[in-house]
Length: 128
Image (cartoon, rainbow, N blue to C red; front, side, top):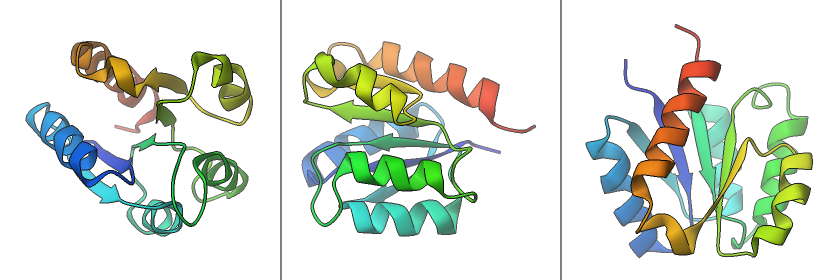
């Protein structure tokens, strides 16, 4: 069974681009365009991993991360932050429960690193 990724980004263009990349790599992708929808879909679809933007409408990414990690039903899901925020925020995000941080500006040049990271996370966190 393909691992499921919940991809959360308010940019339709980036959602489509990332969705194609993940689909080609063998992931099943569920998308959300705002923090409220992300929380609902995380509870409903129980994805294997979440790619989360920080600057979102309705509920900001950091709040989404905190809510996911406080909720018994979603706290086990690894969250990879995809953000244009400076790397200086990485420590705060990891402390809040992020499994990893990835800069959006590097994504186009470093797709393989992201896919490798996702593969390692699904290998370690997804039950067989």
